[in-house]
Image 1 (spheres, rainbow, N blue to C red):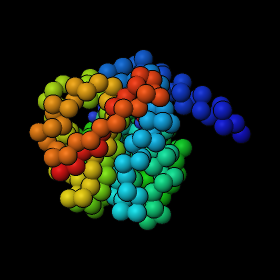
Image 2 (image 1 turned 45 degrees about the vertical axis):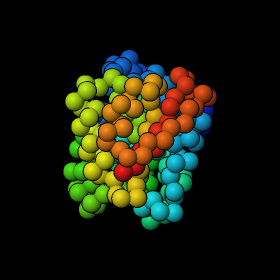
Image 3 (image 1 turned 90 degrees about the vertical axis):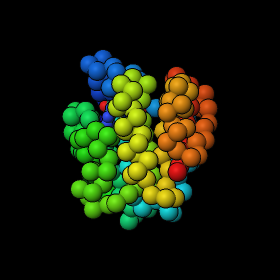
Length: 193
Ligand SMILES: C[S@@+](CC[C@H](N)C(=O)[O-])C[C@H]1O[C@@H](n2cnc3c(N)ncnc32)[C@H](O)[C@@H]1O
């Protein structure tokens, strides 16, 4: 049986190995810090969150905390492009509330429909938007704005404020928080219509 510390270092190694294989898509060499994850999750009103979507779960550091906070009858759909991450997440989290989907966040509305949902209450993104072509970035953010319900929100983090010029025209309300206890320091955004 593997000890907790060994499991954590295996996940860190898996993350770093995939960063080295595809740095632009993975976007960071280590997973988000507990402080950044806490700041993201503080943006969610858990009693109202029935359908949650996660973009870019990677090795599941945010996934684990979403599952720990969400209601027993809520659903989490985690959308990840990387095949190895998808396999690892599916094995590590045999939670009946979780669906791990190998797809692009750009197809979020199709993914929601596949599972019988019209919209999501919350979308939590770890995507490295700064590394994407401008058109893909715009497409994902637009699709996301159409996929969240009227009282829902998109929560995301970035390492620079550059994305704000794209978020502004798509979302009516954009609030941000600076999280210094992360490597590198990050900006956490809550965007709603
Ligand atoms: C910075 S990692 C985040 C990992 C983890 N959630 C965290 O915060 O530590 C970004 C993840 O986004 C995934 N990704 C990149 N582009 C994507 C896309 N268009 N759709 C879904 N996942 C994507 C990458 O494979 C990677 O796992």
